[in-house]
Amino acid sequence: MEEISWDEFAIVELRVGTIVEVEDFAEARKPAYKVKADFGPEIGVRRASAQITVHYSKQDLLGRQIVGVVNFPPKQIGPMRSEFLLTGFYRDDKSVVIAVPEREVPNGAKLG
Image 1 (spheres, rainbow, N blue to C red):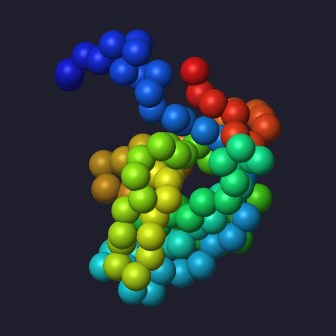
Image 2 (tube, rainbow, N blue to C red; image 1 turned 120 degrees about the horizontal axis):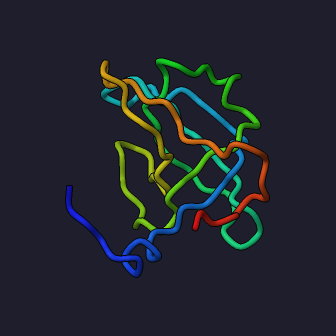
């Protein structure tokens, strides 16, 4: 494991957002959703592609708070422009369990 400094960690903008819209991403190579999350007034609503269909239905995700990296450059994923990285943990079967705050916090709150 490579070590990083506290200054390097501080550069990563890990922010809380609330999922406001979820659609199937039919054009994706692997099963995925198109997710929109509200990261508060400073950042706004952003879109992402997320391969989280194994453990979550669209209905499970709506209104749920998530942790996202919001300072990566946008990435083109097929016909969609992904604007944040929805964070999660890989299980042995390569499925993803999303990272969430343990209690509700304001949208846009920074992990630190």
